[in-house]
Length: 277
Image (cartoon, rainbow, N blue to C red; front, side, top):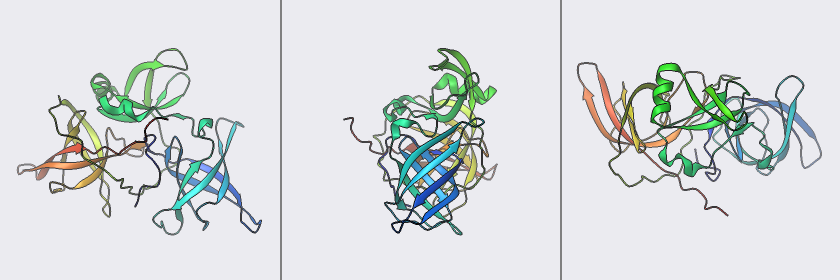
């Protein structure tokens, strides 16, 4: 699958039902309840049953609390890999300032010092945000499944937990254009948390992450990935929950004969982002 949008924000694997309505070039109306597969600040990926073309504009509507609804215009950027019996479409939100997904996406340059990333929710106001976790927060999530941080909306420290899914479904595999950052020594943080490993054409694997650093991770796996293999990883990972996948490349692979497992070292692969304007 090819990259279909500039990496202006993290992309979150999240299932949300949205109503899509449109008119064809012949003026024929169409509507259906679509489902998000991935959401980002500027768009996302929708799973739909209708066959549509690139450039088709539509109105997206999603229900928030009670009778509170949110509406935005969107455009299909491209059809991605087929997803029988339906279709996957990359979409662009035409008014990205409208915060259609009700998720705060921080600037990706802030991820430079992050050990992990999660979609989290404030326990007080329910504000959702992509959170870049530091060492202390990773340790807190490992032991308590939550972290304490300042909420800009509540303007007070609060407890943040991982967002729970609204819809459960399988995720498509997305492979970005990548480059490996220069290798340098980085302090590693010991943390035994779950990680989800993606490889195009293969079933997702749940692995155990042993340590994290700003440059990569170490994890145990039942599968032997050769050095140089490109994968995607979401860590920390909660089965059934939303996940933020990032690209990695295997840099070391060693058998653990006594356990029938393999210990892999992987480096994060950075994706070029557009310069600020």
